[in-house]
Amino acid sequence: MRYENRARLIAVRALVAAAVLVSSPVLLLAGAPIRRRYVRHVLRDAAPQILDKERGRVGVHYFVITSRLLAWCCRPTEALGRSLARRGGTPGG
Image 1 (cartoon, one colour):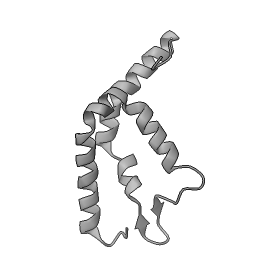
Image 2: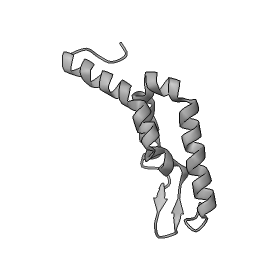
Image 3: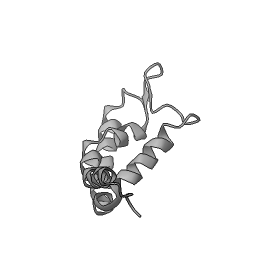
Image 4: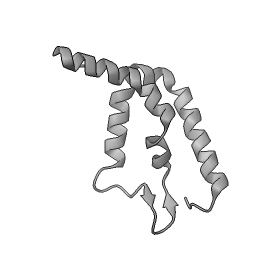
């Protein structure tokens, strides 16, 4: 989507926030692994760029990755994973 289309960018940002809120119960329980897999999928070698400044385009994935709400919802499972890693346990098993 193009930078110049501000209304569309605002709508996409709002829809991403709504999707995060709808999926927040799942994200609070298993957010860190889900977010890690998604970021790995989006940033893989064969993937198209999420932010292309030369062409003036931004991908929807940019709003998902930079969402503060998503980061906030994934924080509990990230903290749990860190505490288990410090104790020598493995998260999820």
